[in-house]
Amino acid sequence: MQTKARRPLTERQTALILLAPFLVTYALFLVYPFFRGIWISLHDWNLLAVAFNPDAKEFVGLRNYERVMWGRDIAWGFASPVLQTLGALGLAATAWAYLTGRIARFNAVVLAVVSVLLIVLPGFHPDEEGRWYDRRFWPTVGNTILFVALAVPGVTFTALVLAACLNRETRAMGTLRTLFFLSQVLSVTVVTLIWQIMFSPRQGLIANVTGVLGASPINWLTDERFAMAAIVIATIWWSLGIAMILFLAGLQDISKDIYEAAAIDDATGVKAFWYITLPNLKRTITLVVVLQIILHFQVFGQAHLMTQGGPNDSTQVLVRYIYQTGFRDSELGRASAMAVFLFLIMGAFSLIQFAVGREKS
Amino acid sequence: MDRGYYWLVFALAVPAFLWLVPTLWMVSLSFQPNEVLARTTSTTFFGLIPIPFTAENYAALFAFGQTPWWFLNSLIVAVGMTLGVLLVSTTAGYALARLDFPFKKTVMVICLVGLMVPEQAVFIPLYTMFADLGWHNSYHALILPRMAVPIGVFLMMQFFQAIPKDIEEAALIDGVGRLHIFWYIMLPLARPAMMTLAILTFLYAWNDYLWPLVSAQSRDYFTITLGLASIQSNFAQSEGLGRVMASGVIASLPVVILFLIFQRYVVQAMTVGGSKG
Image 1 (cartoon, chains in turn yellow, blue):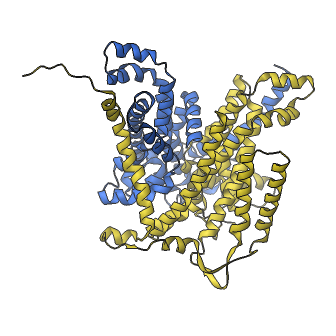
Image 2 (cartoon, rainbow over the protein chains, first blue to last red):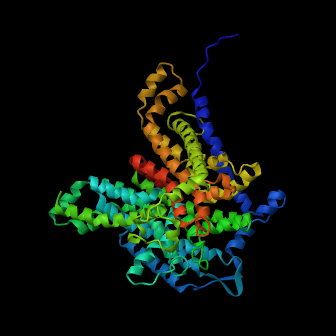
Image 3 (cartoon, one colour):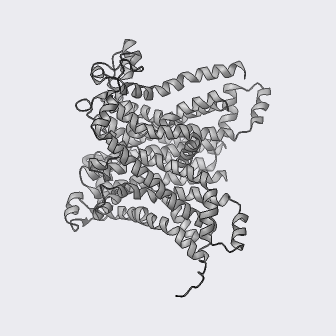
């Protein structure tokens, strides 16, 4: 037998060997499914029918998108005066703030785009003869946006105040941080289990405490007025931790000298927070807000387990609707079209996140 | 420390306690008899103190019911996923950080784009794919999809880029192969980053809900997170509140213990996970 000394691998060969496990899994379980998802969305694809007979799907082009997002005789006008006025005001405020140099161009563009969307999107409505092909889709998107609009400021504000208070390296502060962070590591099903019982009008801790104070119990999870608030409260309780930690990291970067200089001018406590901490944390705040938007737009477990999307669809959210359309109604084509819609929204926010992250370096 | 500091700690202790109350309540209810809980959940101090006390719920969990089995499933899936992610992330991270090869830029951009794809956007095609392969209701079906997530690769790549190059160059001059350098020199150095990544992955695997929900239809392959979801909707008829709460405590124990022991890594891991997807 030959005993030739083994030739060492070239750099290229080594790279190929080392990259192979990742590239294979990445291609198989992310890249391929992604494109396959788009492909499914272009078909009339019934989960059960196709499972029995792979040819039972039919190419329908963009019809799924139309069936989900469009309707018969859709017109545009001032169908939702409140939102559209808000959009117009937002646009005016953005223009004013940008022209007077109060906000940077990037922020102005983002705000302007949001305002314009607020004017344009709610304006679409079916006229007397028409109707949406899917009456639940846009209300579901609206609920998701409402959830984000409540949870994100709630988490951001609470986390910011807490981080500012807890920003000292002492043992007591460390313990307090641990306590606030602890709920973050729980799984969504534990969180919903706890809060389902917490909110129960008969067995719940909240009802028990308010009962002692003489108030009649609220049907948090089954009353249309409170259901959304209930899942927002549970969400804030659950996901405060990351935001707080990110703010604490941001606070560490602010030099102590600035505070000392300000203290000479009698700016301490709330004043110092307002005039020093907030302006210096601008970038971190933007980052946390964008992150939270991405995270909470994908809300599923809370709505699925606590309220089952109800009462009367008031907490039906996008991912839950995708799940139901796909796995309860077996309409994979339509569900995939919604998933692509979700991806586009997430992608837009991810791009903003990249842009904000870049600004730093 | 001035007086203001003590006031601040005191003022913060109240909301911190309130923040802990829901968790405490779950633990406390899990130690109370089901018959009592069926009547009232606020026997002693709104139910926050487990009197009357019983460990019956935990004994019942282990005697019958599937919770221990689900717990084991979760362990297998979480450990398997963690090892898998460590394997693909350290190797690819090192190659991207240190080696030169054709289309390197392209590979990096493709991975970066992958960060933008949320799980919710690919779970339907993944479902049909795994169904075609007949892979559902198995451990690999629960483990494999998450191995494809590029965040670990970027984490490891950034870590390897920060290690000074001269360590490797000395070894290269001595004629040591790249694979040896990777295995015997770089991996031991990367232990802290691997720890962070391992914890991030373990937490994700333990708490993941959507993918197990569609992939594992057989109760034998439920993870504890999924199992808990399946019993919480109609516990009143079957299990009893105390036992469901005990399941919740059991489901949370590993992650809470992990958090309390490796707090620094967990916080770091969740920050990385939070800020990159």
